[in-house]
Length: 256
Length: 228
Image (cartoon, rainbow over all chains, first blue to last red; front, side, top):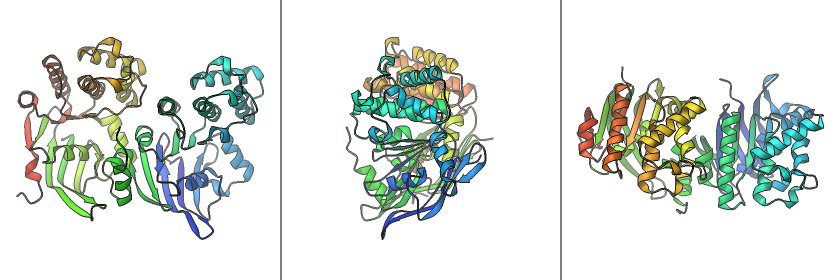
């Protein structure tokens, strides 16, 4: 089986300081990989490099494209990469406001991404938008409201609908449950897990929440100081951590 | 043909944050289980029964030696191979129920079958019949098991483990915290799994249950490092 995404030696410096160093991994179709580490460990830098939001100093990000097979995303033309960002890739920001257009309606937020890939029929777009709002548990009568009028949890679900409506194959998530109440987090986790299974999505989830990765991710990478210090099956890394930093991380979690 | 095979396995824990203390817990572990066989791991608390079981499941790394389940070399496999092993080959009744909050019990139970590729309706009907057999009141099926009592959660875990006909199974104290009626149901489920050819490794503090359904016992204290 061809990996959906291969990272090879990804390195990014901010001046003299290391953002992330020499990160390599393969992600296979249907796999969810978590990236954990404390603030400043380089996990968000790595995610930005993978998603093409930052250009790394060295390394390759090879994506198995539908039409041309494995391609180095970093060496693609800008239009080709933008197209990827609108079709096969999706990015769920920690702060829903970064991923939504706050000035247009919920329906338009979802419809816009469909239009970006060529949908033109208003009725179809509205129907699909309504369907997706339902899937993320937003009532149909809210379709014409602006996201500003939504709660934080609803905004996050709207962002997910906007991202998944075009049927991406790979979703990048940056702290998708961060900043939400725990009850809302649970609802979002349930939703994400269901969507990942139904749509056969692959996902890379950056979080500092070990409980979230245990429930959501098949595999885990632990980062510290810009480097990956440990990687493996999620429950293996959490139950039998090998690296001193991971042992510290796991033993520092407060029990409820 | 053995379904589960453990050969010359050792394991130690290194505690990096406690002066790098190395704690050897197992050496030279040997175990093999044929289809239709149920093998009990016995030994005092701390002897390594759970450690051995977790190494077979793959959430503990194997220090050295080999562990195979069907065609998967668990000790050396890539994460996705271990995931395939768990999806297709091995069921696990653990003592802990870890679930996404809000997910109804019926879905929690059906999940391993769905993951194994069983059609949704079949998986759900299998889940219903197991929950009914285990006497979990029907009004609870639509609720998340997170607020259930210990015995109820235990039965959800058992139903989850038996919802798919896995060729290999791990059972960690499956009869703990159950009343006599439900204990009998669980023993029947284990007998049925053996009859269809499942290879089973179990930990049972319940000696009577062990005597009733296990074909052999393996004393893991034999594998304590330094024991000869």
